[in-house]
Image 1 (cartoon, rainbow, N blue to C red):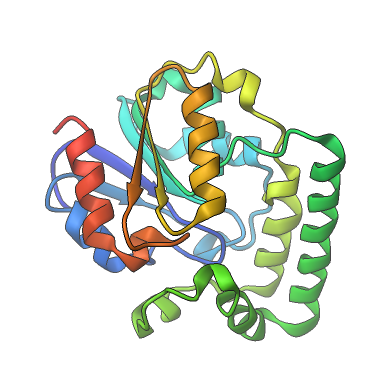
Image 2: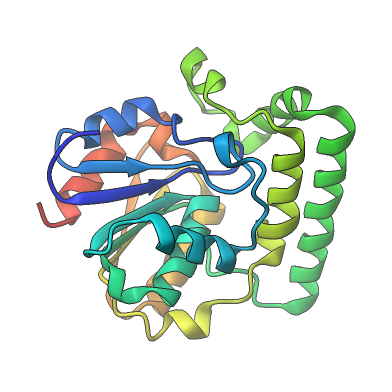
Length: 241
């Protein structure tokens, strides 16, 4: 979509390349916006891949010339891994609701177990019922009602459960030490009402050497869906045109 500098957008868990239609439409007025389905989602539901494997799969299909890479939540995890493995491909990095991972090994193992339990539940109840449960979580209570967004969600049961098992938060190694040497200009964004990821954004600010942090007022975890205009404006104002 659009024209201008290339910006690649990576969606979150249960979303697809067709998600965030309002946000994408706004950005397409400034950038050539590229989107794709991540492993386990949409047309790429049959692909099962770890975060590092996903980063390398992206490297095979994304432009060779430097581009802006951006992503939300799971997409932000992938973006950080891509930046660490393929830094020369990026002109800038934008991550929304991102984390450097879980530092404590015991806590990380607990989260991995929780992700696996949730994957088992997806297999048990199916993707459609799981989406109802997923979107009813407190972190999504401020999402606006948008039938187009619901229709764009991925509905492949095995793909979603495999995504959690292979690329969930519990699988992510602690990236803090590696990120300290990542010199890509980086914008870290969080919804101002998302206390957990405001904290994660501040940790990333202390870790990354070339970083700015911005908060989206009046938004929670999925700021690109809750306030697409405000988040798009932050992206546009912070990045070279």
